[in-house]
Image (cartoon, rainbow, N blue to C red; front, side, top):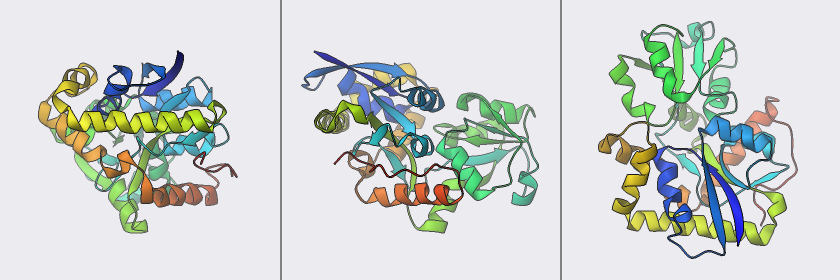
Amino acid sequence: MRIISLGYSPCPNDTFIFYALVHQKIKADMVFSEILEDVETLNRMAFRKELDVTKASFHAFGHLREDYCLLHSGSALGRGCGPLVVAKKSINKDELCGKKIAIPGKMTTAYLLLKLYAPDVKNIVEMPFDRIMNAVSLGIVDAGLIIHESRFTYPHYKLMKLADLGEWWEEETGLPIPLGGIFAKRDLGAGLIREIDLLIRKSLEYAFQNRDITREYIKQHAQELDDDVINRHINLYVNDFTLDIGEGIKAVDKLIKTAEEMNLFPHSDKPLFVD
């Protein structure tokens, strides 16, 4: 039986989506070998073509289109779910460009949005996403770009929100914010890629129908163990776009074309999907 390497993050939305797939709760002609890493690590692994199928940021996908295609299921898009810029005290947009800012990685969509929002930002420090709020709180950096469940917990660190980059994107474009997707190596072939895509959808449908069964696995990997935080995280990042990206592809197109126009992405003629 074929083994497919599958990379995704330990965040609740991803472990929720892939629980059934990696625990063989749905019938498949292949076995999935999971690799759980933060999204920036997965981005770098995809650059090295180490994973057959992987979660990655749409920022990274802008550079990976020659080798990877987007799947219809599994994406993280939505409204009111974008990254936040936080700090200990108020800093206006012009001042922000001169401040030291912690980011969760140069290939994250969060950082791409920051570059679109404030192109002159240059003094950045990369660190794991779960260390950023503490670094801001301790004054190691002036501000932080936060993602995932940090969106719900930054007030615990006595931090304030300077900007909601998802909200800014929605106001600028009228479109949902495309954060991350699930991507497959093009050389797997169209038939196998479509089969994997369908299995991911079935895995998500299983999770919706069996939330209690998935809970232990989700909590085993979550940064925040509070049930309310986990549920809010899943409810925010897992939605109709996750089942099928559908009209959300317009947001992906807009992000990619905007970044290409600013010379942040190389141009590619490859289609986003295999079909």
